[in-house]
Length: 68
Image 1: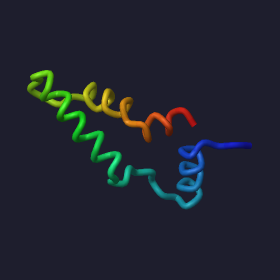
Image 2 (image 1 turned 180 degrees about the vertical axis):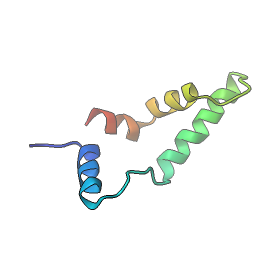
Image 3 (image 1 turned 90 degrees about the horizontal axis):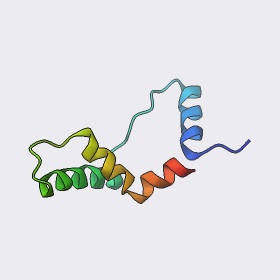
Image 4 (image 1 turned 90 degrees about the vertical axis):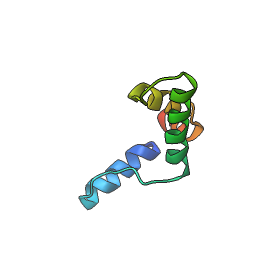
């Protein structure tokens, strides 16, 4: 049976009894920076979940993770 990257990671972490957490990396940093930039360009007072979702969906690595 073929599993996605996320499913393989999840299964491995469950076997080891670990919690799955995001590790800081360049993609995550780029998503955060883009979310702040989108909010700022639209003159929004706060950065919201919608800004983060928009940024995630415009990040190639995140989209690849969703589609595998």
